[in-house]
Length: 364
Length: 234
Image (tube, rainbow over all chains, first blue to last red; front, side, top):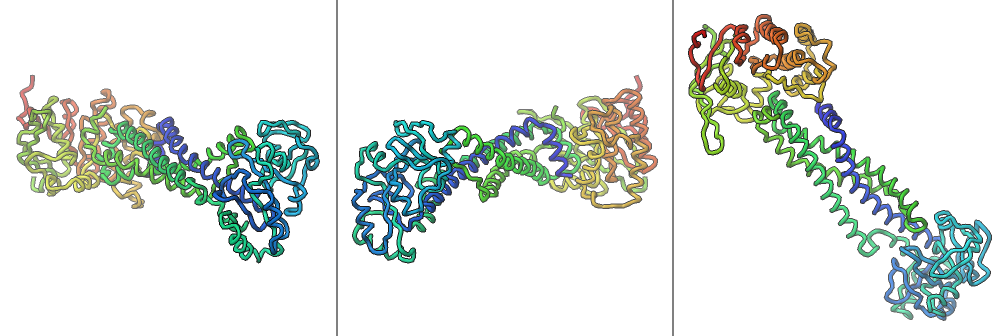
């Protein structure tokens, strides 16, 4: 009977219900979108790092695994790495940030092929000239670009020479020497990938390299993959926490306001229920349960809206942001919305519980 | 009257604070109502009859004096105790019907049963008896309708069904015909009289309408917060 009463109350004022649910849904969507974007970007980065096929990554001093670093390492180092015990292939690449978080990699295709078996081309093949560029199928699809088209990257006009299957390095690849010249970093690389004769030697090689190059950041690819997490992106965890806090405040305020209005509008009904023997506890339960239902609907709506947000991001910001569906955050976001909803219902609930029945019955 | 009165009121006073002014709504009311009696309290607006109604129904506490319902001192009850009283002992029929607008007539009645905690009790005899009552009230075919789809008379009959569904010891009716035309007024009063006669339902009805009061066994007059002798006929 209580559920029926709640349902009828929600149905009786559809606009209030709809707006409340929508306003609860928005912070849920915000959380899911933010977390989904974080996870999507991290998964994409991890996948592309895994696809390189190296065992060790070396980055310049004062860099970090999660950041792009300018080409500051002398390219001669690549040869030196090549000569170290157990190292079978050493490949240096340069990275440049294009826009937002999209990067372009400068690669010597011949060397890179030794490391990973090279790119798997879907359309045409490698670049043959300095003004040619390779893009992956993801970028091509999002930007609606085909082989032979011209695109502008880093203020430079490039002809698309080929489209490769995504999953290695960046979405955009240009000749290493050309990128170095464009950046004014001739004979410099951003990072060096090392492939070993046996992955079991990874720790030993890292230890040996760190003795000679103590200031350089040297990671095993296995470590890098494990570091692609929310915790290791500087400030991301804090940002998510702030968003969760904002979500709680919004949902709390929405539910508090909505239920307070509901209590005011239903003053006479509260009097009727009390005249029928509804206790203070039952009145509180009724209001809190209604808020709970709205919180639940808001959560479901928020989850659905996160799919809409994903579609909008893919449509409006192509080839840049990747949003995963953060299934593991659905219950978390739901609990956040429900917690805030219940919190927001307490004051209106207590007000309804304390309502004087005679005054309530006299309310017009 | 050999049996103890079901309603026993002694020296009942009620003072309301309106702003900085104390308003004495009841000034020492003494009244007994016998079990199975149909009593009408008649008086003009401001005579204190609604205040008496609210105190007897446990909707508000008295300032002083004693109200006993079936021997139970209402003044000694906590808020929770008065809530229990409204679930089990007294029920109300209001002038404005006071049905929940979002629920159907049937659900309004079921809600009263639910709040009393009796909704899970399945007694076929009682269910059959209540169906009889619904037929007597003439609303058995209107239970799926919402209050806005019912006439005033039908709404009041639903309110009466809701009031008696839990078999309260006392039915309190506050101007039950105040919002009805003469035909529906008569129908509702006949229903109240029928409930009193057939089920032995104790009814305390307040009204300012002498014609409505005439349906009761006994009429008590109130003026200025006190019970007064019957005024002379004009």
